[in-house]
Image: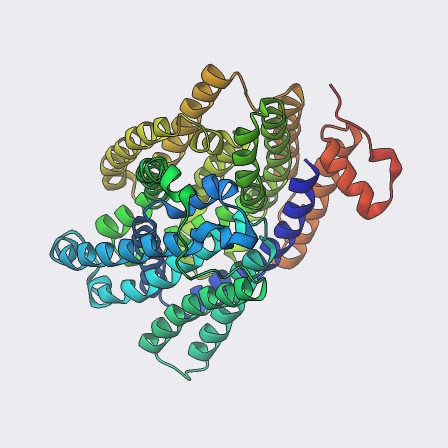
Length: 497
């Protein structure tokens, strides 16, 4: 767990610095200088482009992490791994672009409530290209266990660039069309930074290399890639279908509101995402070495840490949500309970740990596709039923149900086939503490100043929650982390069994 803990701490620091900038951009700048329709447009362009890029990778991002350990040999230029996978990505982008162009008539019909999206339809192509190559190069760096620069680039550099261009728009130095163009350019810059970094590491092997290993693994990689791209695409669809359908059924304005509260809820997942980035390649190595004990230990420890961090973030965001909305125009205030349901779905996703990554790195990786297809169908049906009745709240309800169902199915699958599950008795105690502190913090009277209100609630919540977690020594990793920063030896103990 040491590698995961040290690396994920660094990534989480980058992520939270980036989250601070993200809040500043999306809550203060976007909401106050862009209309809700313009906010919705930027959100839906990004959502579509991420899906576009996911298709174009043809599963190579996951393939890189899963199979790179078998090609890892710097002296032999990793047997041409980067060159051949780049060929696949290039072909994938060309095919995806052709499909995307032919889909425009369908999109015109489906998004008739959002004509501005159609006006910017082809802007998705360069935006998707930037996102595609950033994801592809990031996966290569993750395979090399070099995640810091990629996270720093995505979470901090990207947010700083967006701050600059929204500032230019606020000062009327550029119009909205130019803002969109510069927003697309920012994503291309991020991919370029990773390319330069890989060259700096002397790992940019872009010349074709003949290798017997590719002949040996070719069929396995192709089959794995086909199934994992469908599974990964399903995961992306599962997290974005609500935004796509809110835009189609309600328009860009409601999607601007929905996507903003969705972003606030996403802050909860930053520790989870940081741990995932480190744990994913480690799981691939555990499978290669058949180290099931190490995998089970990683599974439980990461789940416990995610519950601890997810709990404090959930409480902190929920008890402060009214004050957070005070920084935004009144149109956004109606989404308070939409946020609650989205935050609960994120907490459930975090608490169930690495179940999905265990499946997709195992020999039964094909099974995750069937879970995903079932859940996509369920999510689409729920959104079709609930959005016309409850609007944005309907989309949030559909998300909560689908995420819960998805993770329950994967938990059962991992336990049934590999006899592993992520929960210990300490997870139950963390949940009890989370609920208790949530109830207590909610009783604090609201203060007139939003700044003081946030400060008071946050201090009370942190002292109660953090004190309980540390006092009862529920996670050795959390206690050791606190000890390393505060030198309070009392808390540096092992997990209570």
